[in-house]
Length: 446
Image (cartoon, rainbow, N blue to C red):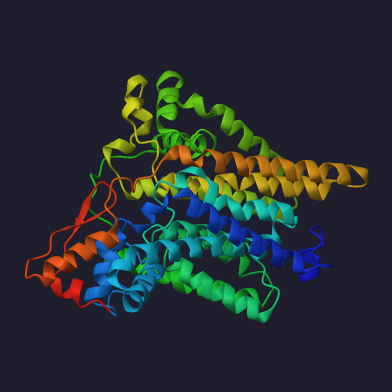
């Protein structure tokens, strides 16, 4: 099985290559995240990491683990928050959260190497695929380095788990556990249900634990959605045209033209056609997969593209506000439009995945002397694609800027509490949100 899956990449003869590639991707992904977010911003608590996960871990360590929030389960962030509160001082919470989240994301990148081998046999393409989740520009402003957005990486992981083919019993059960955790962290993995149901018919016993773990997690999400549905939004009508235009502005454009002002000005002058040149590149890659790809590659291509569109569309429909009515925007309306929507980060990862898939398809098709010439050219092309996104990622900025380091705030609050004064509100990102903790929590830290 392993040899059949890896025959094109050459790792059947040299299995250490895949492990070396996974280790290199892990190191590169971790280093990129650490460099991408300035060091001072590693010590900033982000949104739900404070108001929801930290508070839950402090007030109800066991009960908060399966507590639904915003309509779904957040198993991995809840578990990590509980572990961090139990093992680290409160002043170190933000820094430990950043490093823990960055390591988890890097592990997801590394896991892509073995998980994708069924559909993407060429190893250089899988290496590029593994780096996609951290270099897509819209990932950086909010998603990197916090617990609240680990669900984005779980969406990517879940997609490739749904497309994976375990080769051993140990791998099968490890992937099954990962499938359960991913599904219990990201509700939109319900999109993978048709893929899982189709794969039940594959007579591969090693797939059954994976499918079982996945379905168990999805059942937990469905139950949470029914019992504690998402609420608190405007309820304005969001239609398919809004999703399409929003996808062009928040997913397609930011992959290779990520500056907010640049996107706004382009759409103000050209409308949705501004995204046409970048979309054309992805369309060519998709066409290569459809026309030249194996049935495995075609399935993977269809899944990532449909998941990109559906995850973005589902996010808009589940959070209906007036600013998401993109189809009605014209001219100067775009100059104040939201074009750095974090929902575009996950959808952008999945859209960008079509390029490495297409490269693997071409690499498999090459033969004879064309293989010796073509594969290095393809590898250079993938490096340029990944490099272009990584190079432009800083252009998206960061939403953590301007928030006082968490450790300094906690230490100051501890001094106030020690002198008999009451604590002040703690500031968390983005946009100076506030968190109130009592003196007993601040002073009697573990």
